Structures are given as structure tokens and as C-alpha cells.
Image (cartoon, rainbow, N blue to C red; front, side, top):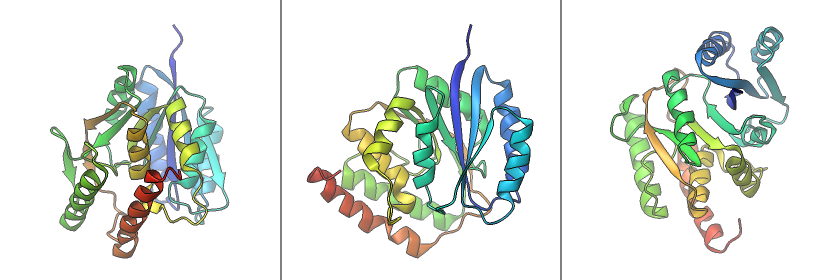
Length: 243
């Protein structure tokens, strides 16, 4: 029986300190699973040695693809456009810092196969465990409360970078969202994608995960603050169907 093809995407920007170890850990994990994986590492114009490290690793593994962009960093924009290149029927993405325990990959994929269009890891549903700084935990909860009420969603965690999609679903959403040339969307990409998915009545499932904040994570108030006016403008555009 032919194995199901899965495309796993991981964005990278200046991760030379962890990239070799973590890519090898991911490859070791996916080798155990009953799926045919391609691992696509999306290099968002790294200026350190991330690119050369990836090139060496990809020469050793046929299913490891180094996809480099020269117009970055773009946060999620180049990553999102890369989803169109997926060879698998299911598209998964997660962050290079492995904040989410890899044991949940199987759950993520199997839940898609149960009939859901999008499955997202959640740090705030029953059964999840989250380890992060108190300041970030409070900011994240406040943000999610704002989005839930402002957009009338039933999602507990709009930001988690651990998701799976049916390929046709994420391709449609990426085309609809377009490429943000001004890079105003920034860290709101995940949230906007889920908001648009709900407008299409896609079936979305949150699964509890074990999540540990990455070493590089920090609270940037100026960057985080920009999310709110962006999402307010987005609601107006969606209401006027300027999407």
C-alpha cells in the first residue's frame, strides 16, 4: 500500500546555532512515521551560515529540500507562498525551534484524515501544557481574547505555529491573502488565515499540545502592538469584501 504523502514546511531565518541539530531530530522523527514525508526548509534570506548548513544536509537526504528566498525576511509571507510547491496532499508547518513536541505530528495528520480541513496545535485548550514567560503568557491570552470577541471566533489559540491543512485549502487561503509587499501583516499571518478559513466554513480542529517557548522568543511591544490596527483594518476590508 502506497504511503500518504506529507509536505512538512519549516521557516528559517538565521538559525545556524540550532538548524543542524533540529533538522536531524525532525528527520529522525518522521522516519518513524507511516507517511511519505518531504521536509521543506524555507530559508527567508538568512545572513548567517544557515543556508550552507542546509545545503550540506540536503545532499545527504533526498527528501530534504532547501528552498531559499532573497527578498526576506518576510515573516510568514515567503513561507506561505512556498505551500503551493507542496507535493503532498497534506501540508504541515512548524517552527524550527521545535517549541511544539514532535510527538504531535501524527495526531495533527490523523486529525486531518478524520475529515477536518485545518488542524492547529493549541496551547490553551484542555490537556495542553505551556511553558513560557509570564509576560508573554499574559500578552498572548489578551490577544486571543481580543480576536475571539472582535471576530466572533471559537478558537482558543490563533497564533500557534503548528498546523496542518488539506493542500487545496491552504492553497486557496494563500491565494486569497496574497503576498503582503509592505510586510504590514507580520505576526498576524496565522490569525488572519484562521479568520478567513472560518469565513469559508472550513472545519477547524484545535488539538492540545506540549509547548515550550524557544530561546530566541522575546516580547517586542512595538511589533506586537501593530497587530491590533492591522486586524481592525482587516475586518473593515472583509466586511466590504475587499479581500
